[in-house]
Image (tube, rainbow, N blue to C red; front, side, top):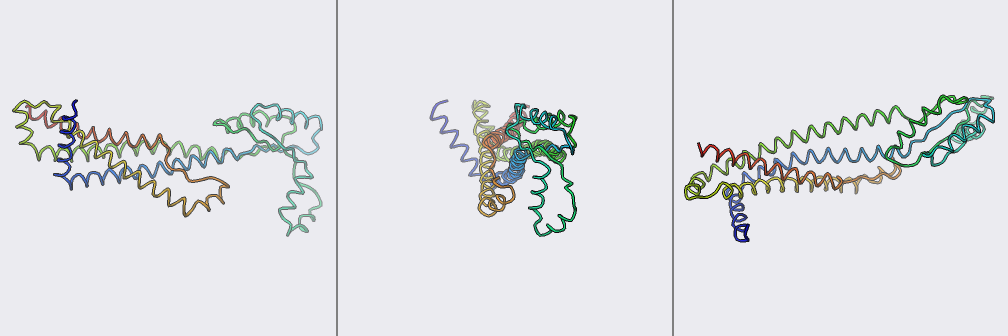
Length: 302
């Protein structure tokens, strides 16, 4: 394709847009709204996923030990913990230390606590695992292995609520795929109808061009490029909206999030998702235009 031909195509495309300015703006506006909805759900998903990763990093396995546990069995359990390749560190909490820690948490009611006359708290081993994508799986596997050991009374690591949250994230992923498919289909129909109106407004001009020998490619290209512009503009405006929301949340709510999560931050949609939104939008614009022009030329040949 020569430079002059490329400039001719761009000039024709811009003329199409100028001639149907209101249709173009309505189409881009609708696509922007659709992609903004998708972008917002992606934004929520990315940050929930970050929160899940943060919680996973905070999870510790606590092994509660039976009272009057033999020293040899206690040492065996410690060796079992220390010898696991995924254990980063561990701490043995004796009954006495657990009781002191408990008392320090309730200084105002220390008299009531001392009135119990005995220490009901068990000794425990607090285990922290190394950070990795499969960290929670390592914790689960080790928990299954150690829970049946002699001297182990019970375990605690929040498996149930983390499992429920993971299930929720799987459902969220499925929902996003379904939503994305529905919104993309809607965008294809919107762009297809917009381009169809643009094609029919130039019906006489296109028929004349075909009569004097213009190829279908020559006629299709400006309309296809117009559809790509529709998608690209919609994606750009939608991403700008989501980025603006991200900036607002960081400015006004980041401090509160830090206090609750001890360091987690709001994240914008990651680059692969941004690229996916742009490329999908461009493809949707191209597809909508192609369907309209192809249908028009097919009907003309009849």
